[in-house]
Structure formats: C-alpha cells, structure tokens
View 1 (cartoon, rainbow, N blue to C red):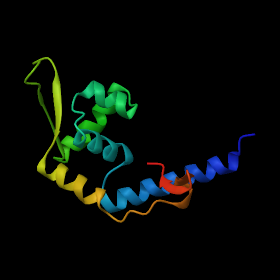
View 2: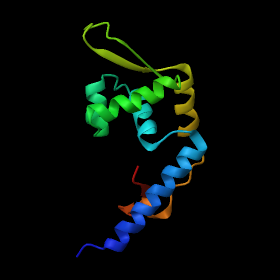
View 3: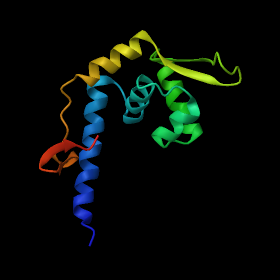
Length: 122
C-alpha cells in the first residue's frame, strides 16, 4: 500500500527546500536545474526541455527569466543558424559555483539509504 502521509511529508520537504534555495540563491528549482544542465554541457533548448522534463513554452519562460537576470545568453548556433545555443554568462557560472558549494541543507525526507549509505536524492 502507498503511504500517502510519507508522500505528503516528501512534498512538504521539497517545498521547504525550494523556498530555502530561493532565499539563498534567488533561483527557483527549475532555474537551478537549468543552470546545472547548461553547466554540464547541455546547451540546445530541445535537449534542455527533455532533460528537465519541461514543455517548450515553460522552458522559454525559464530561459527568459534567466536571460533577463543576465545569468544565461541565447545565441545562434555556429553549426546551424536555425538553432539556438544557451550558455552561462560570467554571473551565471559564478552563481552555479556558489550554490554548488553552498551549505543549503536538504530536509531529512529528501535523503534515502542505498547499499548501507545515505545519499541525497538530488
């Protein structure tokens, strides 16, 4: 049987994590995931949408927000002028480095045990 109370605790913990992330970095969860994906080398909007499981319209809104804040840029691809490439700005790269190394605490419910050791689920 599915433990709905456990799922609710997980949902509440995830919401608290997102609020903490927003307070510390100014980023929404989708913002942070997109910056991480671009930092890992995923730069084509279609690939980003698939990686983050976002609709093209939602991806565009996230990119618009990050571009307005000068954290990413969209440029025409040097390989195919019909395509765009997303890249981090200096500010975006610095922010990725800062929050990757930050002391953002994961709620206990966002940890699980695997093969005898505790790991984060994100």
